[in-house]
Image (cartoon, rainbow, N blue to C red; front, top):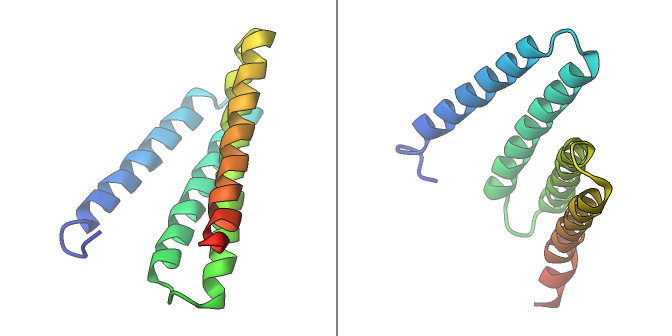
Length: 121
């Protein structure tokens, strides 16, 4: 994203994420597990965006890029598992299986795309 036009969009997105997370925490202040879920998702998203930004700025063959790739995949996996868990709890068991199968497909597909497929090119 360009430095001039994209900064305001990043700022607005951050403010919206923060306000939405604060509102979710306020609404579920009586439920400690829900507050922990929102806080962990919020900080995982912040870390994910920060790692992506560092990855974009790193030199193409830098060792730091590999570590950032691992961090991005790990955070993405963490968020996918968290949201799948929340959604699956609301569903009946057949749909629950579909939700977890889709999550596993996304996680495995991300691993393949990040670490295996790129190495074969």
